[in-house]
Length: 201
Image 1: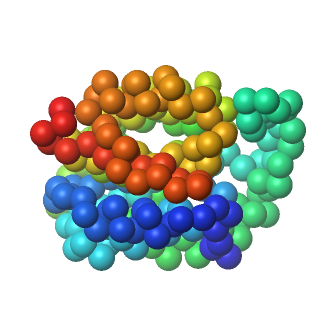
Image 2: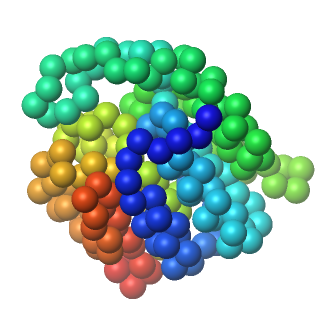
Image 3: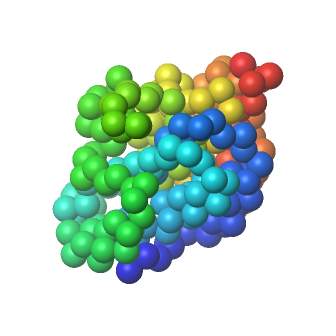
């Protein structure tokens, strides 16, 4: 069952519609949970007629005990393996969908050299993302680690979407993103979207 646990998913659709995409497109969501963020991204990219496309979703599930927010203590949420199965049943209908049951830090290590895409019978490593939705652990430390991955792996024109942005200390995040040419283009109560254009680099 695909569902959303946040708001302003329409922001994602609208900003992807404005995005210039290449023939090969890679997108990612850190923190899949109920899957609506990934569904929203895939539907928007697919509607633009992308030739070669893969969306990667990363979530360890497993009801892990960890710190969810800067001012919180480690707790266990309801990110169960049963939720994982319910979510994946619907998302696996998308041929463009790939799921990794990893913590985000392990994913960054494994995928630092790129994701293998099969194109015309051959495998190519592609390491540039057009859209990344950051909706994993909601601590500033975790978000900074995610941004470090983004700094090395984004297309010249691309989007970085931060969920629940008001829970973070955004000072260092803003500085890091501005350093690599990203500018804020959309701000809501929950979602904050940064965009990089060719001319911003």
